Length: 240
Ligand code: CAA
Image (cartoon, rainbow, N blue to C red; front, side):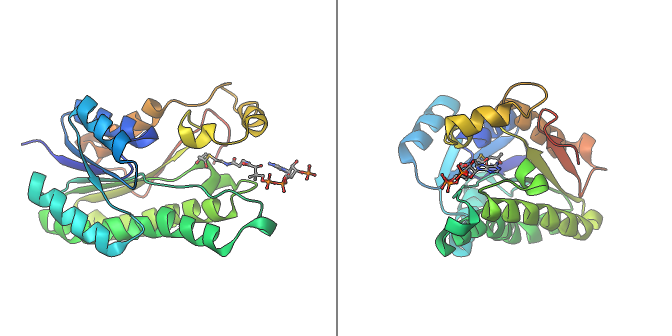
């Protein structure tokens, strides 16, 4: 029986690469998406990976959605908290809504997704929680007080939960991607993006597949001694 993996925001960008890489590694994969029905349907048609629509910012939707995935596929062994949004603005222009939306999705989303899955992993004495944080949670970023705060919070969540999961065979880790060639990064104004690429020692944006390979490793049995860790994958832009 193959292990079951659930990837939030798993039909686009880094999440799509993660879903595909886990499938290629032999997992049965389910992917969630928030809004884009057309892209999700195309992703399922292309990959055969089932997609489920719900908002990770809503606890009840997460609990109901997870129950549905588990009824369809079986208990979830690997959770990849990948779904994330940006609402960039310099702080003096940032609205309460921009702050709250990012906190609800990028930070509370981890609670909402992990909390319903956690008891089953504890009972079965196996689990992998892998959360996609960001370089900007490590170093901060102009225009991202909301995003940087949430992504830094993801790292605190990871380190605390790793301690609770250790005796139950559950590892909890994070990955901090740098700037990856996805729609999210392409939405940054071109001049700003060019200046960011200039700060990346390898001289290019990362590929989503480069993050997906880190996830496959952390999900594996071979990574069982690694917990509470952060893999930094940013082309040398920032050293922790
Ligand atoms: N450091 C210092 N000053 C900066 C700056 C920086 N990094 N970036 C912009 N500024 C300055 C500009 O030079 C400009 O100054 P002047 O007014 O003196 O000319 C000023 O800030 C721009 O202010 P505006 O009021 O015009 O700002 P704006 O409302 O146009 O918003 C912004 C600007 C939305 C923050 C825009 O700069 C931006 O999108 N920046 C990119 C933020 C970013 O990196 N986001 C990452 C998205 S990808 C992602 O998040 C994935 C991941 O995990 C890596």
